[in-house]
Length: 289
Length: 289
DNA sequence: AGGTAGCATGAGATTTATGCATGCAGAAAA
DNA sequence: TTTTCTGCATGCATAAATCTCATGCTACCT
Image (tube, rainbow over all chains, first blue to last red):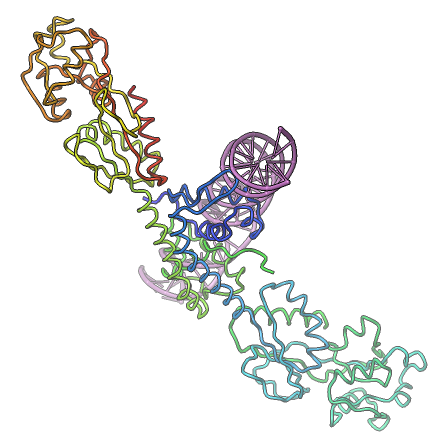
């Protein structure tokens, strides 16, 4: 019976033309020429066998049938659009829980690439300040650091922390080699200094050789201090890569790298955007390794 | 912001797939392959950044997001379709008022050509039995016969009635020429016989020469009688053309044609389908002339 | 009277949708 | 268990819809 199926796109177009009252304006609104609009409206009218507009050479006006049809379908079209938009918003929001340091030093600087790859996605970052703070229910993904040997449960590996000693290049040029250790103060970024202790145990350096002058409670603050030349520190590659490639920090190749722990994540949502984000951060983490 | 505009057609497709729960079935419903459906659904999902279906290799199932979206948009899509369908029905119905004879002999046999040219249109024919009967308010177009000299008012010409004497070929082979007149009885189809009187006045045949044996109150009945060989009659070309080309009737070329009146119409609606129909019957009438 | 704005239309280019061939894995059947 | 069958995904070639551009038209403005 029906030779061609009704094109809802054409109906949508019709509502725009009816609302604006002008082919030209409608064309500008959706970014095509008035010619395209004219063609399409005409086609719709032909398919439906109805004239929606009376054409004078210089303008168009809705017919009665056009008016009625507009009243009927415009709300429905608007509903569908709103519905789709809401979907786009709700479904594409990815809540990421991470430490401030990781967010500032790695996640946020990389986000523009994610946005480029998945334009729909909107990432919301929740930074729990302390490493062990509780993860909120609005987070779809959580990332946190695990010390070596710590129980990882169902957390998946993001990147191992194979830290090397990093230091501002200014400090490096005065002294070189293992002799640096007693001269340059180490920056302490955990209360118990477990990372330095573990590092010492693995490299054979006696912990007593180290001098600690500054202590910070976040890696981010510690890194700022390190860049400022206040001392050397153990920087997870994930956090230091940018500074290193930019030349603001240098790695000491004197000591072999020590695996201190790992960054791991859990995914708590099956939503498409969340899965995409997980896949993406894993790729991104690979780059650093 | 929005890279490509939301395709309402795709949303429509989604509702069908969601309803049927199968790409294959949905494809059959709209007459395309499941491959096409798959491509399009995937594209919609990509554009919206949402997964509507979970795919196992052998089947699909709505996700939560898909369910919600379906609940929201399906009624809107249905509304638009119903709205358009109603429009098609209402706007494309053409009510034609005409005499039974004209309807049966000319209009109805031609209608299939009109349907072919304008598939949307639905023609409703109202036959007022008597020529002068009142025209109902549901008629968009009225066609009626005007005697020569009658006031035509605002009725537009459809076709002049330049009648010739027609007769069944069986009667013709026995006698020829003007001699036929006294031998073959004339069929009377108007109470006052004005048509034969006018014809006699114009051709110079004395009215007294005619013999009238049968009288009918409609042209249609008279034509039936004529074809059956009951006599000769004055047949408006519009009504007799088919019978003549089919060989069921022959025109007497002995007498020059006489313009007895005209078929005329009025259009009482501006609707597109009605205008199309008027244009079409004028063309159709031209063919006969 | 001349100029401008807005729409229609035809032809060609481009974007989008479709079909086909093929692959794959789960479900049903043997 | 093994085989077959069914339904979906996907790359590529093709068909169809859509767009643009060029052009023409007429009402309206100056």
